[in-house]
Amino acid sequence: MKWLASVLILSVYASSCWGAFERYAVDSDIEAILDAHSHEIYKKIKKIDSTIQWHGVWQFDWLPGYYIKYGLERIKGVERIRRCIETYDLDCLTTPDKRVYHIKGRPYTQNNLNYAVVIKAIEPAGKQRPLTLEQVQQLCTIIRKADYVDMTSTNYIQMADGKLCLIDTEGIFDASKRIKGFLRMIGTRHDLNKNYTKDALKHIFWEIKEELRKHPENISFALPYLREQLEAQPQPHAWNYLSYAHEYFDDLGGLR
Image 1 (cartoon, rainbow, N blue to C red):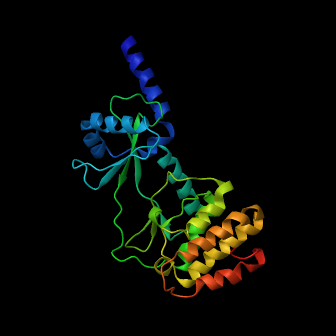
Image 2 (tube, one colour):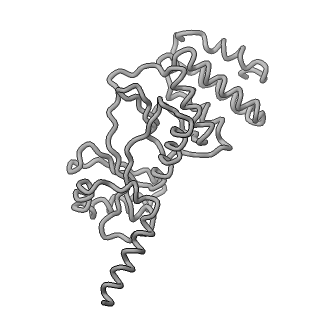
């Protein structure tokens, strides 16, 4: 009977460690495939964990249509974004199907050496369209309400159903850096002629201005950065947003 008690104790311990991630567990058929390759997964995870990079992403022939990623913070981030989407009814946005795999043979303590994140690949829309005002308003809500500040065009995917899938859920969540979230929507990774409709781009300017009114201490770096990013955009412009921005931000000191 002692052995049975020991099994029960270990089972309770494993369950308590699994805890909040249990609802994110991979399906049993996927788990069986992962278990068969657990040693290979652990070697990849361990190598990344020993570096300062911490952004391991892998695809394997034995699990087509999925990515295996390092870092449980991806799950914490997707939870935060999903709560924001649900709370504010952001029906233009979604998140990937991210699951957690406990690496076979590893302890159940919640850390990045014992668990991997498994993500089903996202199928992007065939043709990428400029983001609409409604889409941009909802992305800005994620910045304001979830404090997500990595809002670049490489961190979301336009899907065939018209929704934007926010894929970089391990990004930075920091209310003190909120202005950077809005500024990154203008950064060099964006072609403003292709990425946004006119009304959508105007809304980003509005969000930046409102944030700077609340935190004027950021004006000295934000407006020069904004000018630099706008002037670096491909020519010709679909509309003269550079002149518009100069005039729009004039009451804050202008784009200097």
